[in-house]
Image (cartoon, rainbow, N blue to C red; front, side, top):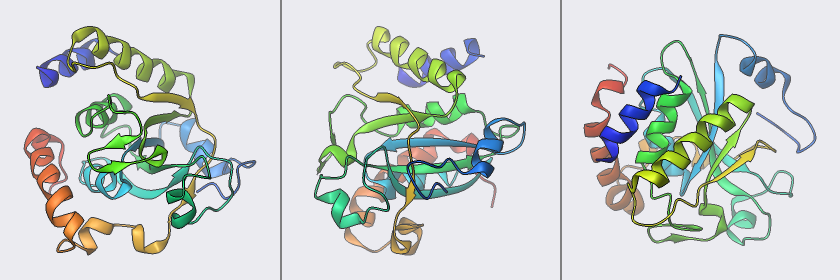
Length: 211
């Protein structure tokens, strides 16, 4: 039901280093027809990264922290829930190959947007569901989908995904990057991410990169 509903919606819908400075290269990307950026938080960034990096048109995915008030936070600080940051991914993509609407479709289908500050066993504000938009168009699209999905009854509970203006982004430590691909036998990867990834690849088989 959810897949059919979002597909129908699609048919009808047309690295920051400090909190004060927006990287000029990233700003330029959002104002051209070349590469663009999306910022999504949907629980553990290891999972989110594994999903989006497999999509055709996605150039790179970087795990990091955003939305908080502490500059250059560490993973331990974010886990202590004192920084205001959320685990998010920075997704650089080619809009000629994959659209923001399609990224939103993947976002809604790869996590539970009805659980406040929680995805499965991962609990805490750093795991909240959030979309950080860079443009008014992104904001409108995200709000449109959220409203229509709530109306559809696709989930039995209301969607709690936050839709907020982009504030900042800090890349996570190197060992977090490409985590699943580098640690497939690690417990969390094997028993939590792998089953989700298998389902994801079946649902989005037509959007995956060709190897």
